[in-house]
Length: 405
Image (cartoon, rainbow, N blue to C red; front, top):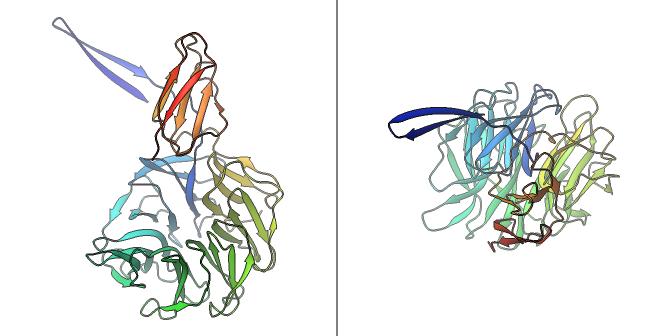
C-alpha cells in the first residue's frame, strides 16, 4: 500500500509518498464458506470483520486473497453450480459477484427482508432461495424468498406468522430439487418446514424440541429420507422419513455446520462449540475427531468434492485444514491479514511493547515493535476494547477498558 501525503508550508507545496507494509497479526475469525461445485479448488470464505472482504482460494487452500467487499460478514454462501465466478452471500442483505469476487453488488429484495442462508438450484441456477425473515409492516416473521430469474424479481413466502420467528438454515434435496427444508425458530421452539413443490406450499414438521436456533441442515445424497438438523440446545436431530419423525442422534450443543464427504456421503462432519465430530453412518452415531482447531465454531465447515478428502473448518484464529479426517489441523491463513484492529496501544516506557485488539476476537501482544505477535489469554466478555493504558514505570502493568455491549 502506498500513502500519498500532501504538506503545505510557507508558500511551498511538498508531496511525500510512504510505503506501508502489514505487520500482522494475521488471520482472524471466519463465519461462512463454500466450495465451487464445478472447480473444488476454488473456495470462498467470509471473515467476521467489518468492512468485510471475501477470502478466495484457487488452489485448494494453499493461498488466500482478500477480494471485493461485502456490506457485512456472510452467514451463508452459495457458489453457482457451473460458473465459479458467480457467488451469492447472505449477509442480512444478499450480495452477488459476477467476476469471481473482485466486486460485489447488493441484490434488491422485498422491503424488510433479511437473509441468513442461500441455496441455488443446481439444475436451474436462475432459481435461488433465501431464508431469514420477512416483514409485514408491523413485525418480522419466519420467511423465505425465491427468485426464478437470477435475482431480478422475488416472491416472499411467509412460513410462520409468529412475531419475531426467523429462518437460519436451508437445504435442497440433492435428488429432487423441488424438495427443500427450511429451519429456524418460532418462539423458543426449533422449527422445520418442508416443501415438495419448489416452495409453492410448506408443511411444518413435528420436530418437537425446544432447541431454539437450528443453525444447520443436511439432506443425505444417498438416502433423501435422512435429514439432520443441528440445533443450539438439543444437539443433532435425525429423521429417516423426510422429517415426519425425529430422534436425537447427538447431544453436543451449538451445531453450527454439517457437511458430508462427497466421495462417501455416509461420512458427515459437524462442528459444535469447540469440537469437530464425525459420523460414518449418515448421522446415526457420532464420535469426536482426534484433533480440533483452536478457537473453533464461528460456523465454517467445508468438504470440497475432490480427492483427499480435505476438510476445512473455521475458527477465531482463521481457516484450518485437515487431510486425515480431523485428527490433525494446519492453519491456512497465518499470513493473511483481514481482521479489523480498532485499538492499539504502545507502552510509554518500552516502545517495543505493543498491544492491539482484533475486533470480536482477542488481544494480541508484541514485544519487538510488531515484528511478531502472541495472542493473549482470552479475557474479553464482549470482544470490544475502548482503549489501553500503561503504567509509566512498569511495562508489565497494562489496563484495558472494555465496553459492555
